[in-house]
Length: 263
Ligand SMILES: [Zn+2]
Image (cartoon, rainbow, N blue to C red; front, side, top):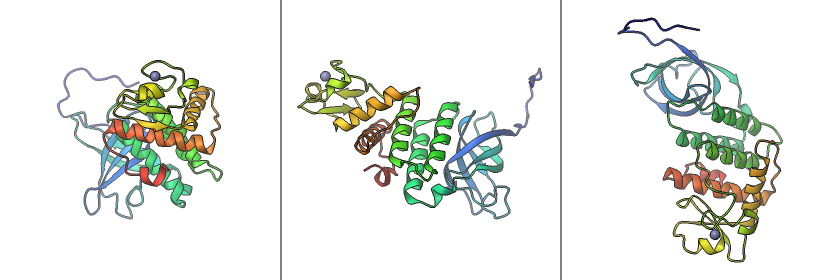
């Protein structure tokens, strides 16, 4: 354990730090450099300047791509100025994602959602593990892309505290299994959850929710913590559509990748 020295250190240099990280945004900074945004396991989301990263002989072996996962060595000045990336060593190859448009689009949707939901500076080890596992699963030959995304969206929104009330009508508390009625059922982001047919009539902002979406949500809820959930294709479609709608409303804008991924 390092003990902080006593007395003021006016010009202390930031010590290089090491983190397991996934690249969630890349921006060209100059001919040869990039600004990279990472989700790290212990330091949360952070942006660093990668000087010379686009040179073929850089320590990262050329410009870094979205979804690159590995160990980063970087500095993080306490002043709030942007840190510097010194080194990137790939530890997980997400090659299968780069060779299949469906897998790649789903992965890009996931990192877009992460980048919009999580602010910089707070640690999110649970979100890191969730993204790491989801990207790994997307690379499996038999990966059910929609189901992986449905679980990811549900867990990510839950982690961010934005899931809303999905176990009963948010207005009258009608339980989930009775929310499906002849008058339809709805979800309102503004009201923060599911609405039964009667309560939904008076809501200005709402989207109609299919019985499949409701049973899919119930499946995710019931399986949480026990692992392993099997959703039908209709349930997957319904859940993904609903959670994407809700995320867009909460974020105040549609996700760029939604039109390629959400059907
Ligand atoms: Zn109600």
